[in-house]
Length: 240
Image (cartoon, rainbow, N blue to C red):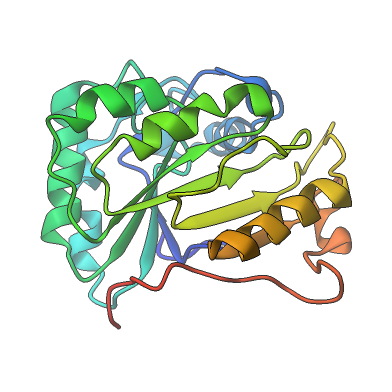
């Protein structure tokens, strides 16, 4: 819904759906929920329903108006595979991504089971990256569901990382994002968890992106890991 964003691993956000419901541990301090409440209080028309799942058909074709190629995070304020979103609307979103083939679209979900079920009916465009969130080892099954899809580029977001993921198999992935939780009540991120993932990404040849340490004051904590930033990306973006 925006032509710009502060999210480090993307360049724009597009929200044809807003609103979500909590499904796992990483949802406890949801930044999107906080933002939706703030925007509703400000009178933003797209957030009249607060954080209830709401379809915005008037925003479906928005990326077609952006002529400069960019990475676009789809539904930063929702989850495209939430059960309250009809299959037909999901296919409409994918159709727009296919049409806007000069952009690279990034779809991230915690609803890996529905993603896997719908995959059989989806012809994924090559400019669409599909990812799942894994915040703790007990959600690693989402990666198995992702790898079973026909998406061209598959990635994981380990954010907020809430524990070690030493048993997470990174083989078959095209990209790994790691980040700590931020905002009120943020749970701490341990450096050894991050280093383990970074080192295994290096061993497997998987691009590694460290987004942030997080915390209540995330800007002060920054995003340096052992003195440098890690901004590796898949080598398959749409040419600018």
